[in-house]
Length: 279
Image 1 (cartoon, rainbow, N blue to C red):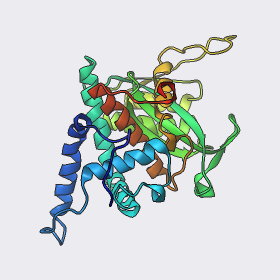
Image 2 (image 1 turned 45 degrees about the horizontal axis):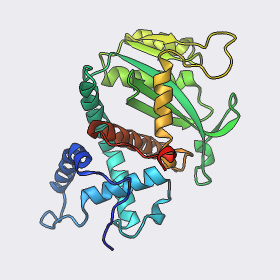
Image 3 (image 1 turned 90 degrees about the vertical axis):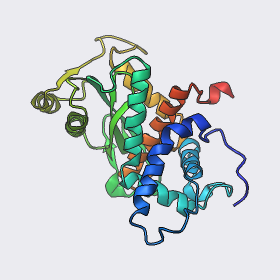
């Protein structure tokens, strides 16, 4: 492996300090059950994470990783294991709590916002994992987001584009109620029907649809919902999310968690995320 000269997506020392304890604890736990426990790890976790963030930020295929990163099968192997073991969700939760406290909020939210995004898929996505969003006339997948009122990710569900917001909303509300019992309010758009609203009531969550004013033309900020729409815009700075390239929906959810981890870590350390406006 050639020397690594650094890329804009690489973790700074400050950001690495935020996430290193979770990754090192994961490695220590796995090595307890490893047969080669006396053998030192071959690859540095920071370099592995840098390579995964590089893919998420630039949108390249795994096998196109630059040669100064660890081999792409190794990088993808770590990505898959971290997704399976819930490491990305753990990091999202940790950074969200830290960022909420830094903003003067309670670490746990009391309200949330739900929304969805329909996205086209690449050729490697199986037909049985796709669908048609009749309203937007897009064939692909749909990303269903649940965020707090700061726009920080609480949960995400990736489905075929044909799955309605109401059906996915039931799952999102169930997940949020289980992981965040203090949440008692949820703002949604008009696509969430009575089924989701009644399900929220059974969970102790008041689901309130927020609609555009009749007759409104052009762009207009919609109260409450603008926070999650802004978050979706933030996520789209990661080119891997411009289209759904992941064969499996759970890998797609992991890519979304990665993008949010990158965004929250940068906000905590005061580092800017460069985009086309700064180039």
